[in-house]
Length: 182
Image (tube, rainbow, N blue to C red):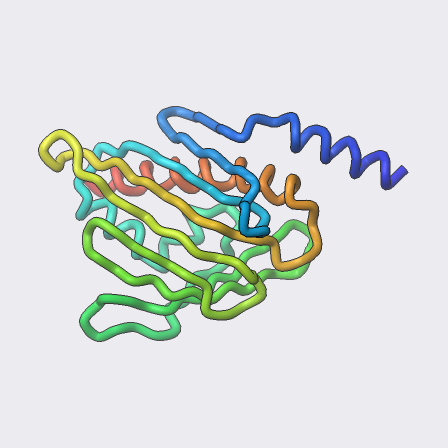
């Protein structure tokens, strides 16, 4: 029975589109050639300046409201000039124990954030955010790219199915928060 259920879930995961589009939020999740669970590319256009979007992106206290599975965000270390910080995220994965990820973000305000794993249970976590001014700088296109893996044994198609759900929600939340601050 369990094997049949797993097979059915895998078939659904493989049959679902690798590309999600919801209200101007675009996300593509594909198998990662490097062996991680998934390679994610997403974009959203926001009616806010890059500076306004930037403030939302770097707000650690706001992060759990924007990512459904994120329980907490804590800054562990910070450059006094604001060029980088090291953050700890604690995420919940349904009935499984919480997952700890630690990563360093390098900042080029207000246009780019590059991040990479420095510790925690997630073995692969790296990527970038890019903010591109539109319409004379009053709107912003946000581009997100990352590679990630699950910290425990889970079939990669299932991990990608979860990312296809979570990443569009996070980008939509970023848009809501940034426009609400206008």
